[in-house]
Structures are given as C-alpha cells and as structure tokens.
Amino acid sequence: MKIWISVLILAALARAHTGEDDDTDAQVEDVGADEVVKVEQVVLDDILYTSPDSHPEYYFSEHFDDVSVLGDKWIKSQAKAEDGKSLKYGGEWSIEPLNTDPLKGDNGLVLKTKAKHAAISAKLRKPFKFNEKMLVVQYEIAFQNGQDCGGGYIKLLRDAPKLDLRQINDKTPYSIMFGPDKCGSDSKLHFIFQHQNPLNKEFEEKHCKKVEGRTRATFEEVFKDKKPHLFRLIVRPDNTFEVLVDSVLVNHGTLLDSFTPAVNPPAEIDDPNDKKPSDWDEREKIPDPEAVKPDEWDEDAPRMILDESAVKPEGWLDDEPDMIPDPEAEKPADWDTEMDGDWEAGLIENPACSSAPGCGVWNRPSIENPEYKGKWYPSMINNPNYKGKWKPNKIPNPEYFNDEEPYKMSTIGAIAIELWSMSDSIYFDNLLITDSLVLADAFLEDTFHLKLSKIDSATGGMFKRLLDYSNKNPWLYAVYVVLVGLPLVLIITFCCSGGADKKDGGKSALNDPKKTDAMQEDDPAEQEEEEEEDEEGEEEQEEDGAEEDAEAEVRVTRSSPRKRRPRLD
Figure 1: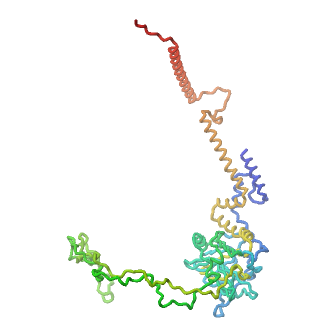
Figure 2 (figure 1 turned 120 degrees about the vertical axis):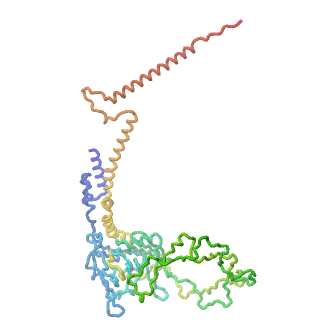
Figure 3 (figure 1 turned 90 degrees about the horizontal axis):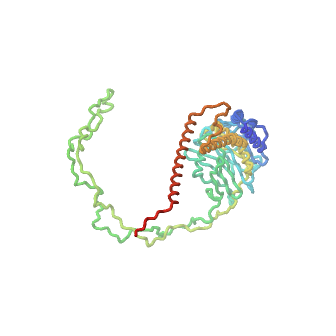
C-alpha cells in the first residue's frame, strides 16, 4: 500500500511540475491497469491535426486543407502548345488526402495524370525581395506510386507587373528552381538560380553541384518508399546555402563556388587569335637517330613453333573420329527432304575415345619460340628541341565582371509547379516561403512532424505508439520510473538482505514458524543437526583437554631441578 501511495505522490508532483491542464484523456488518478488502458486508448486515437494558421510574416503558405483554393488561389495554366491550338498542359490536379495513413482533415495537391505536362501556380502574399534577409523555402512531396521518370520540383517565379498565371509555361522566367527529379538511374536534387549578368543584363542558369556520398542514399529513398518527405532550401545573404531532406543536410556550399557555370567569369581568357608556331616541337621524347637494329634480330621469326620433342601418346586412335553420328537418333516423321534437306543424325562423342588418350589425327603441340623478338624499334631519347606544351597567350576577358552578391536575385512574385512525369498521384503539401527559421520550424511541427507521427504509429506497433504519446506527455516517464524502478529496488534489497542472513548462519524471521504456548515437536532435521553440533563440541573439548595436559607436563619438566652426573675421581 505504501508503494502505491508513493507512486501517486510522485505522479502528482510530476504532473504539477509540467504546468499542463488536466485536459488529456490519460489523467494520473490511479496508476494501475485502468491507467494503462487509458493511455493505450489515447495512443490508438488519431493524432489531432488542425490547419496551421497563416502568420503575417509568411510570404507564402499553403496547406491545401481548403479545397476551394484550387481554381481560386491556385490557377491551372491554359498556355497553348506550339501548334497554337491545343492546350500544352493537360495534366489534372486534385485536392485530396494521402492515400496511406492520412491525418484527419489534412489534404494536399495531387497530380492525378501521368505522361502529360502539368502546370499550376499561385501568387505570393507579398513579394520576397533579396535584401538582407535569408530565404527559407520548404514543401512536402510524396511519390505515392513511386517515380521512374519525372520531376517533383517547384519554381519561384520572377515578380513582374504583367505576370499572368493562366499563361505559365516552361519558359516563364523564374528566380529559383528547387526539388527532386529522376529519369531511369539518373536522379537529381535541383537547386538552380538564374543570375543576371550585370553587363548585358541577360539571365543565365546556375546549377548546383550534385548530391554525393552517404547523403545520396537518403535522397534516393524519396523516389521509392512512397512516403511524404520534406524538402527545405535555405539561402542566406552571405551567399551560403543549405539543402535538407527530412531535416537531414544533404548539400551545402556558396553561390560563388558550388555552381556551374560559375557566377563570375575568369578575369583572363585565351587569345583566340594566337596560334602555335609551325616550328614548335611538343614531343618530349624522340627515337634515337643513331640506334641500329642488331644483325641477329629476326623480325620474321614466328611467336609460336611446333614442339619437336613432343611424342604421340601410346594408344592414340588415329583412325577413330572424335565425334560420330548418334546411332539412336531417328528422323522425325514430319521431315520433308525437299523442304528441310537431307536428314543427318546429330553428332555425339565417340565412346571408343573415352578410354584412349585421344582420337583422330595427332598433331604436335605449339610452344613459344625462344628466338622470337618481334618488330625492332629504336630506343627513345630526350628531344633536344622540346619546348613544352604550347598554350595560347592570355588576354583580359572583355566580358569579365565580379559579382560578390549573387544572393541578390530577382524578386519572387509567385510559386509554380510545372513538370512532366510518367508517374501519377504525386502529392504536394505545406508549401512555405519565409525569412525565419523559427517560423519554418514551428510550421514544420504543426504539419510534417504530425504526418511522421501518424505513419510511425501505424507501422510501429503499440510500443511505438506509446512512446510517441509519452514524448508528447513527458510526465508519464515519472510514472514509468516509479512503476518499474521501485519494485526492482525492493526486490533487490530483499534478496540481498536475505543472502546476508544466510552467510551469518542466521535465519530470516519471515521463515520462522509461528510461536505458540503449546508444546511443539522438534524438527528431526534440526534435532539431528544439534546432535552433530554437540558431538563436534565434545570432541573439541577433549582435544583441548589433551593439549592442556601436554602443556602442563612440559611446564613441570622444565621447572624440575636438573640432576648432575657423579664426578669420576
């Protein structure tokens, strides 16, 4: 009873320390079987999801929980194909939940068709200007039927007064393109930005280096496991960037060093008018002009010759062929000589040769010719006229510029999903553009992490569900510690104390029989044990008495006067 009282006190203290309201289904009223059932029931219930609020500091956010945004906020492209008649983007879009383990009330934008071009876009709440703020872009994607060939990237479109979302196409100017892409064995995680040349004002695409190493395996799972994954891009005013997949850093670097072609062209280039002189000798080694082929060098000697020392093995059957017609073969009944030709039985190995060293005509084996030397070439010497590898002279690059702030890209005014895919049911959700990692992480907690909890709960079993619920309610760990730890401590304490009593020769009071006023018979085992102890005590007393007598005799002998021998006269 004391144990349970202690449990209740500790649980109440832990609950009070958290400062949480008593609004959960599992309250610490009585820690026992009923409490475990309550916790399990809460864990089994669906994870509570509510659509995240739109923070005023967001430049753009979309959770797709309101189906009316399709056609209202998100506009499907009506751009024409090259023929000017048919629509270029015939892909169909829908707003619906995940196919597997969806959260209640959570929807996403889904590409329903495959093998068709698809494009849809929406304008930002306010344009994002690249001044002194970092850019944080993140979104979720799930290739619900896997991906063999196609993309799952987004485009951040350049802000323009005449930007018409109904005419979005693959040539619409953008500032950043970001996201996964795959076709066959070639997969990429795009981060492309368009940099404006300060001299001619033209834009050029800059492609980020490929994801390599161990992180590539993390990225590859996106196309296979059919689960939602979070892609995040961070671009800072100091030109550094980070790319994360499911909060794991998979790529990073700077806009100046990690892109091809480089942002800044070289200061010097090769002179296109400079040509190599006709007498320029680039040969480092040349044949020795004074070298002479030795007289004994025979270039016509064959590499292999017959072994003249070889002797035909005894028992060789010269008249027997290696292969003979199969005597058991029969011509097929439908064999037409005019159509199929003369029928011949198939060949089999000659059974007469199985016990002989060989059959047929015997030929001497070939061996390497010891006189063979091959074609003669003169030895090579250093070229006295060698001038090295010729290179054209360098001249100043007339197109050189040095942009130390490539971060300052064109202002972003809209977001678009423009792609082609051989897979359908591609799920997009929870797009966010902000300049605060704190806000991005908070948005992440309210959206993607809940999805992961739902998936883990559905696939991880009761223990996983209980663990997830406990992580959200840390006060339960105090209950677990008391429920498991206190009984263990008591058991260990009783076991250790019982063992110590036995070592001292005593008996535990718990094992003693109950004392009464009535006479009780002696335990035969105990009585026999007492008799043995008495006999051992008597033997010890006898031995002690014998030792005392011997010591007394020695003392008497030593104390008596020594007798002298008579003196001889």
